[in-house]
Image 1: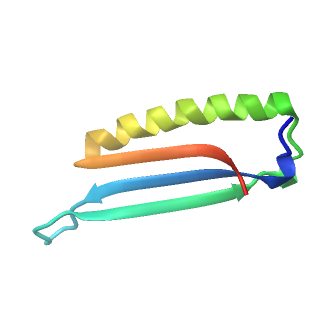
Image 2: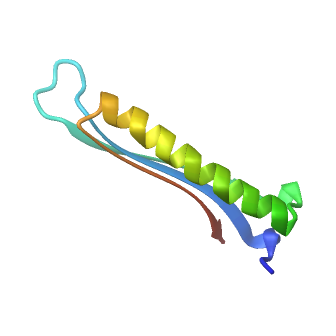
Length: 80
């Protein structure tokens, strides 16, 4: 059984972006973390959250690749 007190939802986006007026593209990393301990998730809820994040990751990556030269998306539940 997973200890939900030490879990966080982590989202990381790596995008290759070209700013207006700039000749070269610039790599940008955006990261966000949410502490899951405040939600008191059950093991079943945690499994559902993991499935949802996988679908979200794929959907975001598909959309980002339409607009950016290069993109990487990582969304996962991690132990602190």
